[in-house]
Image: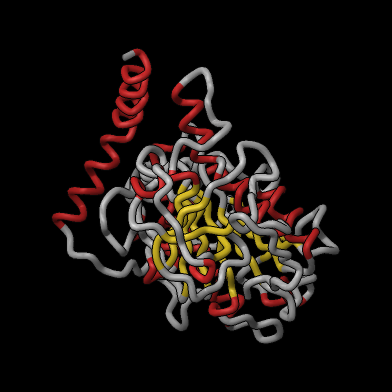
Length: 357
């Protein structure tokens, strides 16, 4: 009873904090026909924690390029200056990753730093970190209704900057974007602004449930937003969306209640479930064992151990997932690193696996 009461208190406080924003959003959806925004002023709905002018690029919405030779200090990209990319270490022969953090994140904070390190351990990449931390932290959470849309507009400008660059052009189809929590939904919104082509891949790491509840495809991350959308769920139904929303959805340890996340307070436990998704994905980049996930009729069958997929039905969750994967998959992890258990009952070497591009 105490745990249930504490859970209700946490949810109640959170709901109260953002009820006004959600109500405004719902009223807007009911009263106004959906239309494609023409400028950031069309998106601007409320007071802002960042100074005007409200246009992209913005000094508090920055893009930092990291390569193997600049991994300790990123290069700031100016999407209005072609020389910025031309003179950078960006290499069109290397896979390009665009990473969008979640609440309270930043380019110099985990998991952005850990993800960069993992990729550069593996090989050569162009890693672009979208640093918009001032928009998604206290006391700015009141602007969460419009901040993700502002971010998506600026990120779409980055995508088109890469797409049409005269010297180092990279089409959207060759770009892999990775978003955690609200960052996953921001990448879904980017699709609304790309005029030509489509993002190659969006990986959503436990897309947040708050502010994005419902089935509005113009707002939530879903399978229409890229050529391939894969989503990892670790806090499903609590802090993360339940789904499924992508071409391939992975419910890690059933989608919630992650092993090793039992804490003194329910809030710490739920937060741990939500954030556990990033260590799983980061480990998948270089794991020799791999997170092999299999299909199952439903969550109940998974929980009671009634799932017996064929060997050919298993797919690798995470970085090296085949873009042909479709459906809902379940995977069980260890409570401590290394989290990956490998292929069920077998050992399979992953040396031949190449990064998705």
